[in-house]
Length: 429
Ligand code: FDA
Image 1 (cartoon, rainbow, N blue to C red):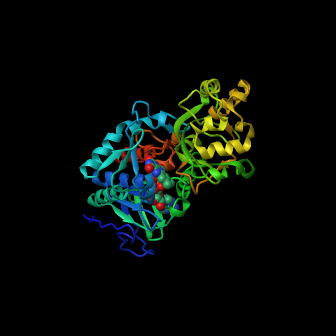
Image 2: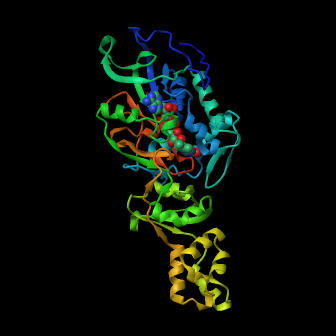
Image 3: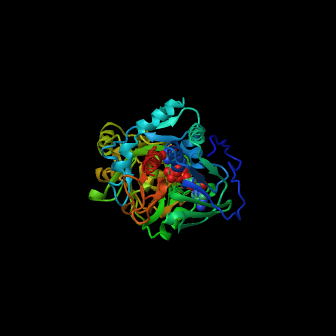
């Protein structure tokens, strides 16, 4: 077992020493497919526990999603995660599944790890922790941990097949055929992530491996994604592209209602910003979203007071509270706003207040996987152990990170799931 592995992001690393036609497949204790957040962390932990680990990734550059995350600063966890009730920040068909792993590897464990590597970080908003310097610090740390633990990383390397075979002494093993030759191992960890951003390497390999081993899947759809509107509905708002404002946003009814208080961003095709990304995880096609454009005020009371005290134009009253560009667009739609406020009947002011505080709008769809930060759905957690991430259908086959049907809110929760599920798996192999 080599003691040291030098890793560079661009060049294929630690190339295998046998030809692709070699009859003897190189043997490992564990093969991790996917060198992203979950895969690298799991490999490093398992290697440190003494396992001979190989990581395979088809991408030229490792951990690209970490690199581009958090605007290049990686929002690597969230301090507000309540490990007693983590499911409030996660979406899954089986909501309590995530609790075991998240309570055993917490945000504090990850921040302590960063601190021990001298990586400085800060809290930005609602418990979200970002690197002070760059997301590259996290990648360098993970690569260093893998190197220290003697983990081999082969990339770029395509995985052609994964089969379960009887090996020496009738022991079952996994045999993988890859573009760099055949390899075998006692355990396989699938850490291939979700489908978002295919141009940096996302594929459905993890779901195909699950299907091959008869592990059920929950339907996938893009999450944390901008919402789009029919061009006829959106024509009025196109000129607002780039406008951002704090809002309350909601979708669903009754006990299925979900609400966030975040910033909204108008785009050329629709709406984005943290408010929309958060609500997109809960939005069901064909249903409306409700937006309170003035969440900090009682608009009707303020309008009625303004009506008593002034003869100003209604549009000018509104411009005190709303961005001028938005008022202009609304006036273009509703010319009566150019009347003096004391000429506007109370009934019309009530309707206006309702429109501003519960703007109902029905998206036509999402920007899809090209713009989504995550994939909702994935490997059905009912077929996995919450303690170990091992499949209950196929022994020694593990699924970790985003490929699993556990999706976090915006704000560092998805990386925390990657670290925690990876840790649970590494302890168990
Ligand atoms: P990840 O996607 O990190 O890694 C999967 C690996 O598998 C990749 O290296 C890929 O190349 C490899 N792979 C895929 N198919 C393969 C195949 N066929 N053969 C071999 N290898 C294959 N989350 C968060 O908590 N905070 C944040 O700030 C952000 N920001 C953010 C920004 C953007 C633009 C995106 C797209 C996403 C985020 N996220 C995020 C989400 C976060 O990046 C994501 O949840 C984690 O990276 C998931 O980690 P995994 O290791 O599961 O997958």
